[in-house]
Image 1 (spheres, rainbow, N blue to C red):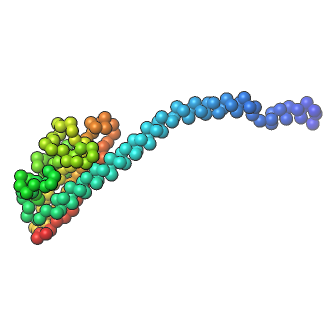
Image 2 (image 1 turned 90 degrees about the vertical axis):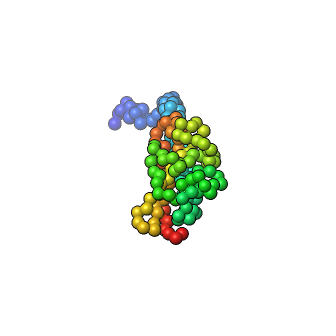
Image 3 (image 1 turned 90 degrees about the horizontal axis):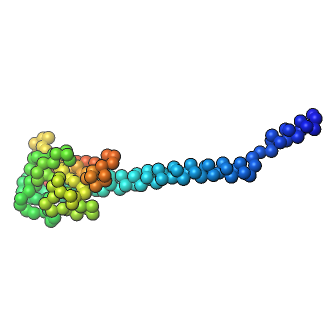
Length: 176
């Protein structure tokens, strides 16, 4: 090989210069800075949805436990207030719905952001954060199916995405 050829090969294999490396890193930093807000939004949304899903499940289970503690033939206890009143409610009377979009009167209650019952709230009210609806059915004699569904107010989250919805069910048998 000639000396000129060796020098040309050596120049081609020399690698990147410091300026090229700094330039590439600058471009990488600009791209990373542009993508970072998207990552933060995704992490926050995921954490928020997980938190809300856990809370809706917890509140649905709480209502189910409250209803399961009633006697099989109870037709008067009002579980929409705390503590539950001995009269004015439906107890475990057959009825209700598990459709949160169309709650049945006396088979729905509302909670604030901290999980406390909201007195005299309705769907149009602005002071509730969680909604729980329940239904009681009798698929067989001496057997009641209790279903509770809880959700989060869509407006409270700006209407973005689907809101968590949790449904729990249990069977209650007579004479218990």
